[in-house]
Length: 419
Image 1 (tube, rainbow, N blue to C red):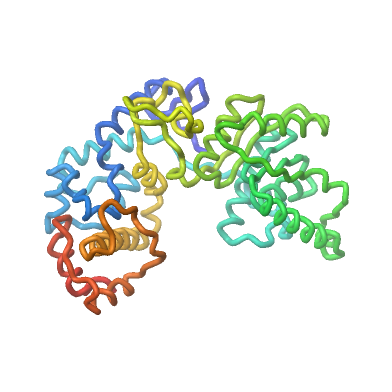
Image 2 (tube, rainbow, N blue to C red):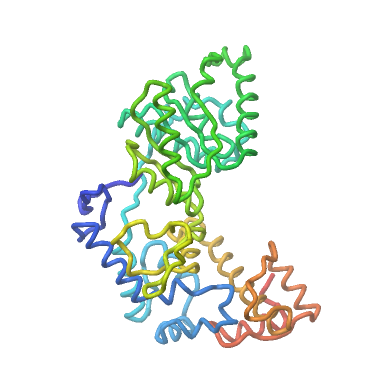
């Protein structure tokens, strides 16, 4: 949920636009133009930074600034989080940052419920969840509950339901729950796991302890939740709609809505497509893994006619002039607005990115890989692991020119900065 300030504009489509824009078409056009102007930047692959000499793709005046002895790497954090360009930054860099933040959609969070509402979610329904998962399910279930009540939706279709954590909370979390839930997942194994967890939960809720805490389980409540194995992708959204409509009919309901938590890649696109092409009353979606979204071919290149429908762009007109590419989609997974809350962690991630790029370069220069090979998955390599490899003399080559070339060379030789 986002807040709407006095300067924001709500388009006819319901999209909250940044200040200065009056339609989604105007906004999308400027967004595509800005992306195309600077497309080289989000398409830089950090792991191939040295191998492909990607430092040379950064504007020259930016390189001079970043290579300056007065540049402080930590100044990148407020620049990425709040749009505050470092002191002494070149005009072109400031203009780039200003444009990026001017085009950013409003995203001030609005609490979906208070502590009293959260307390209605009984602990039994949160068993098996880690701290992060608990917070996500608690927050999202309350938001979905509010949207369902507002739209009169009595059936919630949880797409990509997995083990059913969110589905169970929506169906049973308190005596006030009135929703029926159709939990959809493509995996038979996930369905079996969800049903096993449901049986374990129901057993606990039949206990004297649960009754003493105010929850009375009745076996007829089981009908509120139905798990279904169904593959949801861009080319079978009609199957989801048919399943939802059949569930509504069997329960004597007419209005339904969609939801998804951590809907990976094209699954998010498929959920949105399902909503747009159906009679669903609402959709609540938390996407993830943008790098797994399939994309249309670049302008001027033919797309394989046998290929399935792509996940981006969904619009026939909006953003058709911009081709993101896999590296830009990977960059989109980064929540730079949150870096400032953990600046040390963000700087550590920058350093790990540098080490991975250096390791890739060394593997190629020592004949373990060729430039045509895909980047290998080597698991979690710590700073000390890489330092030990270099200290043993297994690798001892300096990377080509890049930011802070002198520091890079000294690290490659002795690994003194890796600890």
